[in-house]
Length: 115
Image (tube, rainbow, N blue to C red):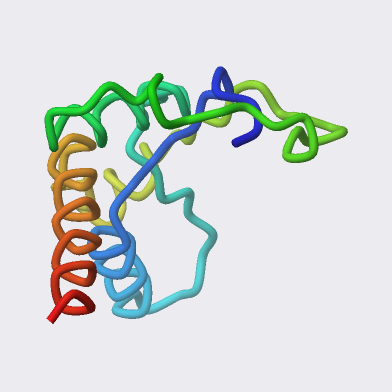
């Protein structure tokens, strides 16, 4: 992995697609930021994902300088207040639930390959 301390505003595609659908329902096109408004480090994403299956991410996740971005943006945080005010949109899926879904989907794919 690259920079584990990079902070990102992680969100679920299901929530973002709903926001896009709401944008398309508007009489006039406009620009919106679609975001959760919560930042979490890549390290915390790994910690949460591995903890879901009872593992310590530090035993498996390694930093490789080859994956470091030359022009890193330390914090990416969106302000979706316009989408909330004009579209009535807010992210509905928590970060923890999104990670759980991702891990469970990976486990299901792994189990299917083992058959």
